[in-house]
Length: 236
Length: 302
Image (cartoon, rainbow over all chains, first blue to last red; front, side, top):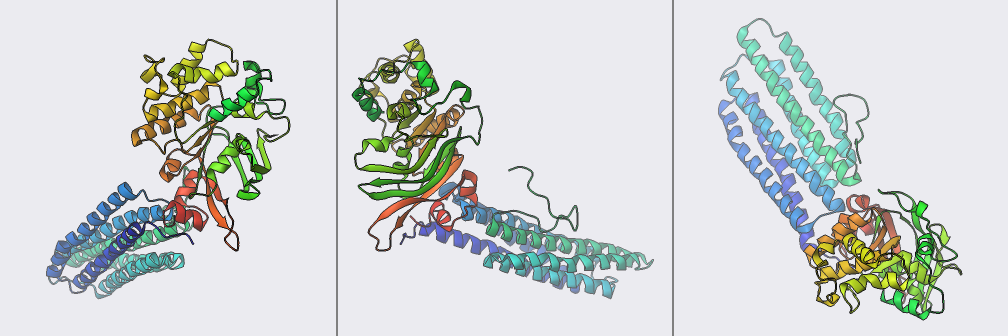
């Protein structure tokens, strides 16, 4: 039987992936606080979300440095190389999702302490947040299990967010003439937009699962041509 | 090259062919005419076609079931663990195994569509067109100039010998370093320079293919880098097959990579090498098809 070799390197790769996917847990925790802050229009909690983003950025820098070291010292190839390339991408998504929570955190104080909220719209946006949370955990599980089917299902789950986003927009349009309510609704549309982007980032993580497993990078959905097959690489 | 010379000397009764004949082909059987000289850039023209090749030593297979095409103006790398038969295989490409009495080559090896092992093929001519560079630099104990001039003189090549030597040394990326000491003994050169001298010596007789059996394993990284740069330049004019233990080297310089493994029979008494995967190098190192290739290139198993 061939002898197993480079065990230390293999352990390093496993640890790198564990730390990177744990970064998605940090985003989930931040998103939980963000949702709570939206639901209760809690300005103080929103400030905590902003401050806490340093932890996510720190994790991003840590993984980035670990990847550079591995590339420089171990010259990874084949599935190891694909994993590292995918983790770089996943880390970027993680960092962006954290930033979207910060964006939301900055919007909540604009709405004020006791805003004239529309209950139906608020409910939709909170549901969007919970759905985005569910997408992140599903993306993480798909990555850890190398489950392409579960990763592809993220597109279907993301449609729920997109539909709620459109619904919120419709509510905002018919919210009435009162200036304060209109301002609140516009602010909440920006919140909805940030949550919608978090969902897209979770789908991007899913695309990386397919890349790690198959070696082929294909967007699950082409944003510029909805319903069509995603474009092929332009050059080999 | 040493073996090449020995055999050439053994055949002194045969008339030596002139340069025109060399250019056209090595004997009555195989021909590479000027019109067929490789064009620049990577092609899919086949230089070698191996079909079900096996090499046996004393009746026992060292490699078997080898089928692969080697393409013109490509660098083709043979990789695999120790004992998988990489060196045995590369020695088939210029009939070096003929020099081992117990060796037997089975199957078919076509060189530009002609049977390399056909009865009319002169192995000495084959080794002129299909040169070889070895793991350890092996210059002759002569001057730098005479090392290069030896092959052309022995083969009776016509032309200004100074020009032939300069052209070969320039092509071997060595001219600037040695032009002022052409008559110094080659043993005074560094290991990397000696290896480039061996490559230049190989080029001097105007080959079609250069075989390299671990040409950098005895060299430091700087010398290795110079040889790799040289190989990338030379592939415009020649087809190169390289055996290497250094997988990053295969990844850096080769166009195609063949991965060989060692197989054992049921009672584990006999072992032989076999090609598991042969594909474009980029594919082998980013998304190999076979799990065994994956495990080897990532270093999971040795």
